Image (cartoon, rainbow, N blue to C red; front, top):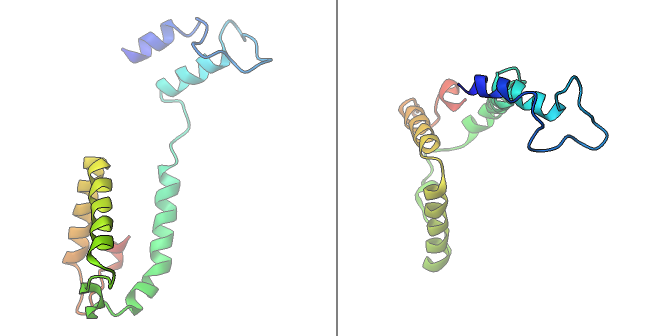
Length: 132
């Protein structure tokens, strides 16, 4: 249905006018044509693949460092030495930020953490596959 509407409106002036100096080309504003191309799936792919590739590269490069950390140390189980009020404020901010996040993304993150925790070895290090 969206494609039909886009095609029917392709020859109408765009809601947002084209940049100064651009005129109608074959009766179609370029901004209208670009919008129609995006609706019809002819737009370039999103940058998610590049971001995923960069994240994988960073994970693989940082994994040796991750393995050097003593994850069994009790320092990770201790609260900061700050007083109760700054700690409470920090926890409050984390809760507020978490509540504002996309629920599906939060669930995916929690699932990834759960999976990574499941592959922790005796040194407290998860597998490279679960780290990436």
